[in-house]
Figure 1 (cartoon, helix red, strand yellow):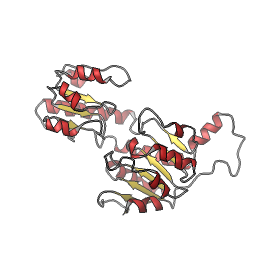
Figure 2 (spheres, one colour; figure 1 turned 180 degrees about the horizontal axis):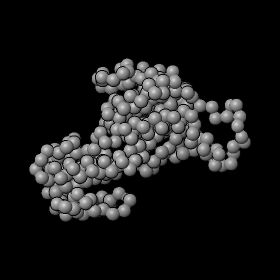
Figure 3 (cartoon, one colour; figure 1 turned 120 degrees about the horizontal axis):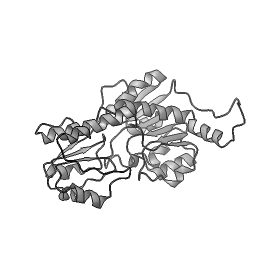
Length: 297
């Protein structure tokens, strides 16, 4: 904020709740730049209210909350915050993989309920990662960083993407990846093609011992189908950081022990969130100064 205050007049939305849509439309009028979050829907209606806008800077890598075509039609620059959150999200993905395959959330809940009766040979048995296969759906910056960490855990990597990538891993068709992977981790953007990519048919193709990890976007997974698969033990478990209708969680997931539910914190380190905000500010200052943006969408 201090960097912006040196050259700009600021109109800040205070508080932790997203800005109401009507208020966003009213306050964007007369502004040259909008710094927004993924909880802010920036569509043609908002852009029409902000006739003076020159840049929309999103503090996120994904930008499905922004109508990019509407911005392009109006000559607006759209920016995001790639790279600075790659390591935090990749580390967090492995935290979810370890957490669900070793049943950490389930075990802690049991202990806190006072139900733990002491050590037992067959208590809370999980799955080891060494010698298992990690299937990545999408190998952008974060997916690649997840793949780079796999050798430390002794996992074989395969991936599915629109085209083969220069990473240490075999490129497979999605059906083959689903049917052969022990852990399926999602790192693809949300598009019409990836909406409900993981549905009943996809889940039914997976191993009964397999796990699904989603740190991408919530609607990539059909949550009703996932709950069904978990209840039927068609897969062993799932770990989610993102949801279809955030902050709502599908009620059928809440009562299941074989799913970890985390409140969208993959990039939530002090260092990373500060860097994301700083990059959005740098994009705004560059465009308002007549220079090219640093990270244009």
